[in-house]
Length: 468
Image: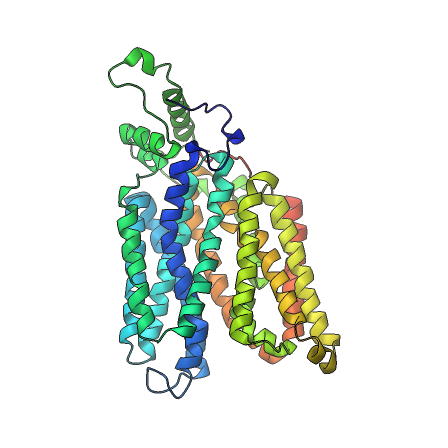
């Protein structure tokens, strides 16, 4: 039995055609979920580590706590570069095994920590694992997915990160400091066992000249039955064989088997792509899409929110998850541009509302309407997740040419991690020195800048072939 592959876009997401693409995506995102848990562990744990009951003995200072929080960004940048260099040498699948090792070491260091240096090392390693996830997993998923579902499958990454952050926040809030690492360290082990049955991507195998393995991988991920063995005549007319041969020619014509030179990067079309990616990254981070959700409790305190900080943060996390689920459902229907620009514009308006509320609302008004900050933050979280947060990996991979996609993704994610570090360092300082209103005005301004620049220059990448 073979499938009609001429119009795969008419198939449902849950058609047999996409079965192994969905299973593989959910399997590899066990690691993304684990990384999200590692990120979510921080906020509740900092309160314990900074108290007189700290497991380390002496409570953390503000400076030490800021380094514990931000070192994950430097680790992520290292992971982006290291795994970016390895992914075309070792392959996508082998690199995925290596993603689990730094994460396991992170939980071991948390459990055995004697002083803050253990946490510094652990957070760096957690970032390294996460940075590798942001390079390896989006490329793996994009290369196994059909064009018609690539957006939905690729945008699931941030859904799993958000789910992991909520789980990490809840477990760190209600489990003992020493129990949580003993439970979560099982997840990277499960991940390594689960990916054992997955095939390497057909693009990588073709790059290595392993055409037979590439063909088997292609049939596996497209859920196609290979042509009968030994019957050469019928195989030439088999729909699955014809589809693979067309795919193979597209991949090889993209220059992926040729040596990469500096000219592949220093040319007008590629420089324009990197320019757009840079604007996308800068606007993503300096709009506060990551930082403000790390300092949610502080923003609630500034706005006079009367609800429990832990409960409020979990509610905001749930709103973020709803936004990402909407992105997964809509990205292959509406396209990348519409969702990204809607998200960026809506996020800017939400941050502007926070700034105006802080500037003009009286203490009496805030006291009487203590629910309002939570509603606004939930709206900002949901609209930011619809495009700014969910689609950055999808757009970067679809913009980059196939020949330099691995290195280009690595460089882009290293830049992304660098700006995560910058944002995590400057946002608390800006809120403390210049006030919440000024910080939110700056963030809204970055949203509107991105809305204009990307609205004019960013092309739609929906349905773009990844073989060129």
